[in-house]
Length: 372
Image (tube, rainbow, N blue to C red; front, top):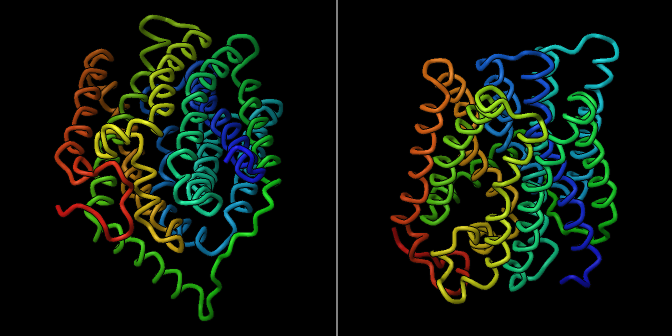
């Protein structure tokens, strides 16, 4: 697989894109908190503005990705994210940067993130063989986990060494690199073309994706467990990004290092994800959920199923961010952190009771899933 030029281009581009996204998880909130003196409610609104496109556009984007080459969608999405972030220091230069402008740019970045995330998850299935999915996902998850370590640390360091507006440009640079790398993919994806009126067909495609996920017990479990996790994780991160600079009074670099400390465990998990299912089964290894989803789903529906699961699983993140801002306003930050952490435990508890826990050592084929 590593000898495949197209897979290497996808992996390199996705790695650069994840670095940009993870750096932005630090630079944008710190820009709001440190440079613009945002309060808890404003920070919650900023994070919600970046996340609400998942709820608004995921289903549409899924049908769109099933119609077009995922390569083109990813290239344009990351080029757009680079341009949006590059506009922030320009706004500072002209003296127009404030919370309203930052909310608009965060929303735009969020829309383009939906396009990229759906497209890259569909792209792997179109590029590699079915028996390479676990290895391919392990590589992509490994780069994502490494970005969780390096991205926040880099973003925090740049905020401390330079300034928050200039640090945002680092994200723009990584998105530009991603766009150029993915553009080198040569594989011509076979995407079915349909006749007829686009709006009606688009609605039918979206409904097909919803029905497919709702009718599959494993995919339903993936969506619901993901929804619980992302809702409480969004609340946790909103409170955490207020707690770190204001309670222990950490610098931007220190905030980045603390957030980066979440990454090593994820790296270990991603490296083991290709081997552990052979011993423990896919049901006992959470990180293989993506490979299970890809294996169950027909090729023609990959984009819609990804988008539907993102819609269900991550659609509540803006509400989670608003919840974090509300908790931080109503109670002290330590109590708010404790409440959100307790909520996170509900996700693995739900998954342990779902059909996912009974998956064996072989990836299931479409229609071959445990009964609920």
